[in-house]
Length: 33
Image (cartoon, rainbow, N blue to C red):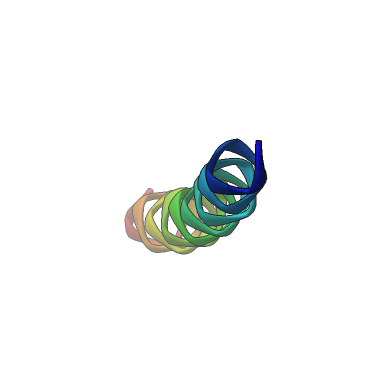
């Protein structure tokens, strides 16, 4: 059980990081236009 909880926490962190990078990339592409 504790292992599953840890995995969920890690997954959430990864998702947050991915969303941040996507936002940053979107900003850069919009600036180019």
